[in-house]
Length: 246
Image (cartoon, rainbow, N blue to C red; front, side):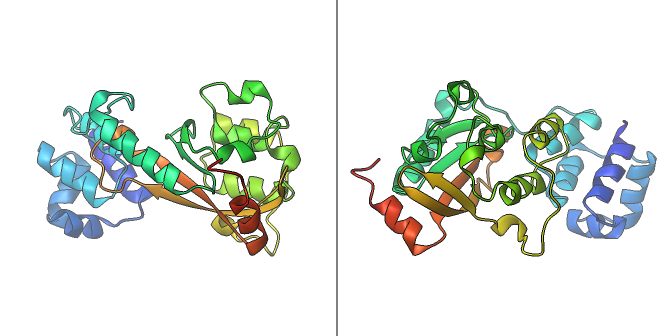
C-alpha cells in the first residue's frame, strides 16, 4: 500500500477526520487532503508529526515513515543490550517493590520478560513445557495444562483476555481451549478479577497495566508491566502471610 492510502487508512482507523488530524499536526485540511490524494509529498518531519498526532505506537510510526520512503526514526534495541540496563534495573526495582503481590513484565507478543518471586504462586502445577522460554502468559493462563484448571471464573477470565487481544493465530489457538460463552450481564471487561485456586487458598486478584508512555525506543514502548492486586481482604491476608519475600 502506498503512503497516501496508508495515511488515509490509518487516520480512519483512529477515527479522525482530515480536519481533526490537520489541527493536531499543525497543518491545514487542504494540505492534508493533498497528501492523502498523492498530490503533495510530505517531508520526514511532517510524517513524524502525523504519526505523533494520531498517537500511533512507535512501531507503526516507523512503518508510516517507511511507507513514505524514509528511514525509521525510532530505534528497536534488544532488551538485553547494555544501553537498556537502566530500564531493566527500573523494572526489577518495581517488581521487587510490588511484593508480596505477583507482578510481571511482558513484551508486545505477551511473552514473559521478567517476573517477581510471587508469580510462582500463580504458576503452581503448570506443565513444564509451558514455562520454557519464551513463556507466553496468555497461553499460560488458558492452556488446559496451565492455570486454566485452577481458574474458578475461567469463562469470564478468558473473555477478559480476548477483549484486549487481536484476532490472530494466538487468539484462534486460545479460543479452542475454553468453552465459548457470550459475556453475561455481570461482565465488566477490564475490571474482571482473576479468581484462582492456590495452595494458600482461593485468591481474587485484579490487575493494573503500566507502560512506558514517553519511551522513544520501540522495544521499551511495547513493554507492559502487569501488577496483580488483592481484590478483597482475604486475598490480601493470604498473600501477606507468605514467609519471607517469596
